[in-house]
Length: 201
Image 1: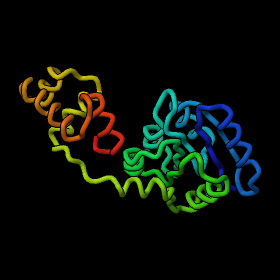
Image 2 (image 1 turned 90 degrees about the horizontal axis):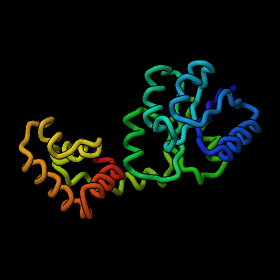
Image 3 (image 1 turned 120 degrees about the vertical axis):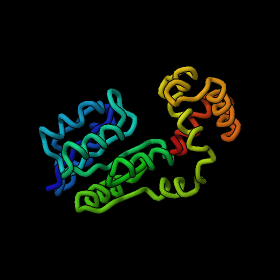
Image 4 (image 1 turned 45 degrees about the horizontal axis):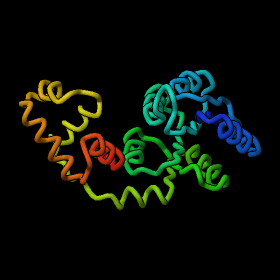
């Protein structure tokens, strides 16, 4: 019997997933949570074989929770569900060593098959997501531009970035301007969005 934990913040989807998996003779839902920060405590209590986790969760991002779950309960394999197939999320998922990545508009049979594959030690990546990730070219940003954008994304001001990276204030502003230009962005916020979605930060 495959023991499954479900993490989905939308109640109707969470209950629908529980109902769907409850129809499978070889699966049992042992826990269902609505926020990312409840995933690890519930997993440690119920010891699932597979955790089906949405990316966009309150409390803690689903990929952060997956990485923490891998560290705390390595026997539990993770299958990520996402509504938006961004290449950056796929790269983050691979870095977190998730076992599967599926889009939410997958057929129910594809989801249950993916859970079985993941539980058996295999890996599953939705073909649409895989193609989108392969289609994205390498980052046009230099390592320094990526560092500056990453710190800016965390909320640091240009002066704070300059202090952390031991660069002059003017140099930081130049890196930000260069990143905006290279990414064809409207401003630094847009540049951060583009680079994050592509998995370059």
